[in-house]
Figure 1 (cartoon, rainbow, N blue to C red):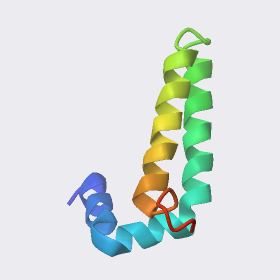
Figure 2 (figure 1 turned 90 degrees about the vertical axis):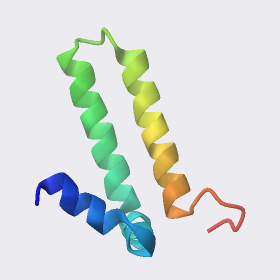
Figure 3 (figure 1 turned 135 degrees about the vertical axis):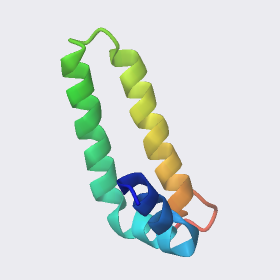
Length: 73
């Protein structure tokens, strides 16, 4: 079983949502760091696309963890 298979298994169902809620700030920080690294490696050539990708990733995290729903949680 590979790393991605293990991650997919943990992210299924409510357990994945709980992990996303508990560690969302760490996931967002990691997303920013990866985006910054990719931007530096491309020397700013693809900055717009990298920013768009990191924003979409953070938006998806918010939807998945339930922070963007109407409950205001």
